[in-house]
Every structure is written in C-alpha cells, then in structure tokens.
Image 1 (spheres, rainbow, N blue to C red):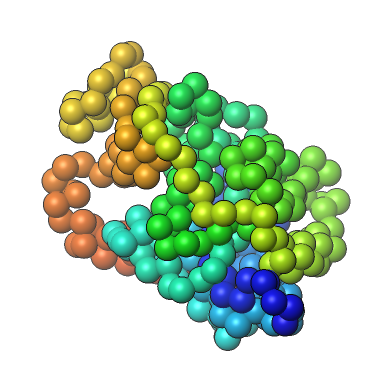
Image 2: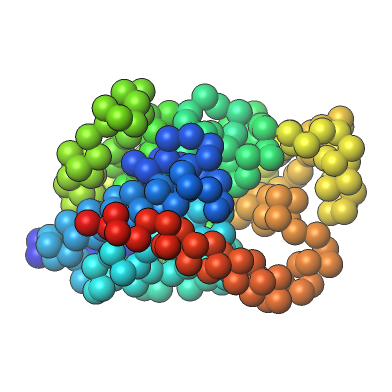
Length: 303
Ligand SMILES: [Zn+2]
C-alpha cells in the first residue's frame, strides 16, 4: 500500500442517508420499511468494507449508530471487519472504545435539525431546531469532535446532498459522496450507487488534507423542541438550564461540552444518568430484540 494512506478505519453508520431509507417509516424501529432499510444499509456498508479491504486497509471497525444501534446484519458484512452494536457510556459517548483507528468515515448520514435535507435532524427528531452560535449544528461536528482526542481524522462522509454540504462546511477538505433520492426508490439504481460509494471511500484513504476536528468555545446553544414549551421547560429545569417558551439555552465551553449537554437533554434524566450502565443494558436488549425481528422479516432476501 502507498505510504500515507489510512490503514485502520472506524466507520460510523446511520440509516437515513443509506440507500434503504426512503421515508420516516424506513428509519422507525420495528416497521416493515425499517427491516428492509436495515438490509440495504448493511449492503451499503458491505460495499465500502469490501472495497477498503481490497485496497489494502488492514482493520475496519463499524459502529452501528442509528436509534438503538442495532440495524446492521453482521453476517452479511466481511468477517474480517468488526461490527459494534448498541451504545456505551464512554470513553467516547455512545461509541465506547474507538480502537486504534487512524481515520473515521461517516456513512448513511443526514442533515442538521432546522435545515431542509432528507429526514434532517440532530440526535433526535424531537429537536426541531438546534443552533450553535447562530448556525445549525450537524451531527458530524459532535461525533468528529468526540473522536478528536483519539487522533481520528474525519476523511469521508456520505448522506443526502444537503448533509454532504454541511459536512464540507464543517470539516475542511473532507471527501463526500451524496445520495440523491429525488429520482424515487423505484428508479434508484442501488447497485451502481453502492459501487460508486465504495470507490469514493477508497479514494478518500489518501485524503491527508483533514485533521482531527476541534471547535473552540465559548458556545451559545439554542435547542427548540417539537414537544412544546411545557416539555421543554421540564427538560431545562431537570438540568438547571434556561428556557424561553419551547427553546432551551445552553452556554457551553466547547463542542464536546455541547455534546454532553445534548445527550442529557435528549436521552437522559439525572436519575437515569446515575444508573446509566443498567439503562444502557436494557436499551441494548431492546435493540437486540428488534434486530432479531428485522432479521426474520428479511430472511430469504439477502442475496
Ligand atoms: Zn439515524
């Protein structure tokens, strides 16, 4: 392999920007559309994994990062790779141990809450708008910054065209490969798109123009919840934050601090945070049950 190319890759895989998800139902746990989307998302990931191994990559860890973290069907992915399901509290929030990867690739991603990409949201669809210092915050900034202390460079991103544009604006020189769903599911040539995705990911291995992502504070965060002002007020009070109407205000020291605050208000209560290992165990069990159900729904369609 050519000197300077990345050899150890972490893949963060989401479903909304995969070739399997064409509506909100396709992203919704335990629906027929979601079961089919799991299969297609798995095929997208496998296309990238196979292309990367063929080009000399030595190790690939895939973190399933949609909803429960149980969407990918590992028996359909090259067995030299490692698929990590579910969520871990740390050291990297949600991801757990990032391993010793050189670089991170983001597949199947979506645009930020408050923007007009396909199924745009940040962390949860309950967040209607999320701004940091007046700008919408895409998830890539949260995930890439959480991996920066481990030296991982964000080199590749795929999602809808709006999401790709937000990734390029967020991270200088990141390589992107969009998925354009305007043609509709029936007309979409999944095999051709996937082959392009794999080739683009291989090309990105030589991308030595990006650096681990850092964004300095201080940061003023505004989160507007879809759940209305009463629910937003309760969430804010729980965590000692300011709230005006349906907007929660956060003053954060830096981007990783923003992430910690958002995880709290989107997913936790103070009581749940204290018993997080048990909560995650139950949540991961729920994910395993869902994936076993999805696997039964798509049996016989794998080839
Ligand atoms: Zn998702």
